[in-house]
Amino acid sequence: MYYAIYLLGVIFWILRGVGGGLKNLINYMDVFTCVFILVPCVLILFAARSVKAFGRAFLFAFGKRDASPAAYKESYLAVRMVLGISGLFGCLGFLLGMSASILSVEDLSSIASLGWIIRDLSVAMISLLYPLLIWIILLPLCFMLRKHPESS
Image 1 (tube, rainbow, N blue to C red):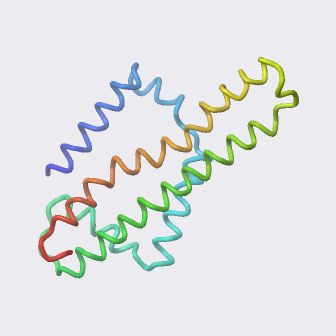
Image 2: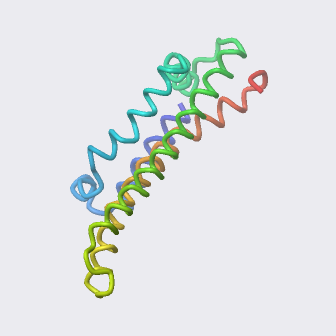
């Protein structure tokens, strides 16, 4: 229950911070970047056979308490794995975006080229936004699972 309140509060706060509600949120949406970050997260869950454990983490957050300590630990590790891989691919996307931006500039000696790099920086930073949103959603799960007495 508290996790649902947290999620609603975060959604409200992000919309308030963006200003203008859902209309201005479109400026921050990039399907390719989202897929670039989410696909490796899903792939690592499948490769580690942790999809069920990851789903169980949300059940634990919304009140399911009758599980073994091993289930809590497995869910905790699955959530940490997604946190790590999303951060890695977010940084990778940022580095790829910035290197492509710098390589596309023909004349680095002009002030106009600096302007293009700064404009491209704002686009490349979207690759860092998505992992941060994933972390905002998953960090409370990680702490709840870690706090369970038998799961450490």
